[in-house]
Image (cartoon, rainbow, N blue to C red; front, top):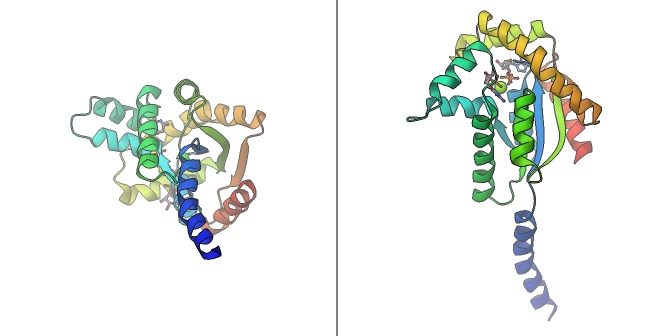
Length: 219
Ligand code: ADP
Ligand code: C5P
Ligand code: MG
């Protein structure tokens, strides 16, 4: 009798969990910081240790640039070299599709690290227009790093990354864009009490220890 009840419950629990997660809105952490602050590196570490899916806006744009038949290839290429922010219509569609694809493949994957977004006012407006009510932004994970350190890291990465923007000329522009357009977005979230700041100038392990403390607290 009891055995049958246990068997019955354990059969129902997975489908119940499935149903609950299907009804879950995507839970989003925006990951921001200067170029080379270590966003990608730390997101990989988070994915290894927590149930998050990492979506890098920059990676998605580079993928779209390389996609055969893309009507945006040239525009994306120019913006990346110039350290400019691509119009949000392009980026938000890539992000939305990546989120939907992830959740469709595995309905338990509804927690996302959205890396390198929103990077300016246009990005934020696009997010609010397209995703309002469709996703919950839990907080902004901000990797705070000295600009000189950021530039040095990107120049080092440039030796092997093959990226068209890991050179001194593009980096000067990227830092300007970061200071002029991205910092105000971080400040805006700060006013809402939604920023969790990490000192990103230290070693990868030290930075990750701080990240872990934040994620363990935030749940
Ligand atoms: P972002 O995604 O913010 O541009 P990345 O994670 O790609 O930054 O890191 C930029 C470069 O710096 C990479 O070559 C990476 O290996 C290196 N790096 C990342 N974090 C650190 C760190 N804490 N200390 C030293 N180098 C780092
Ligand atoms: O984050 P990452 O360093 O990979 O971004 C590289 C470039 O991709 C940025 O300098 C910018 O040109 C473009 N980008 C963008 N909009 C975003 C993220 C990245 O236009 N939200
Ligand atoms: Mg990156």
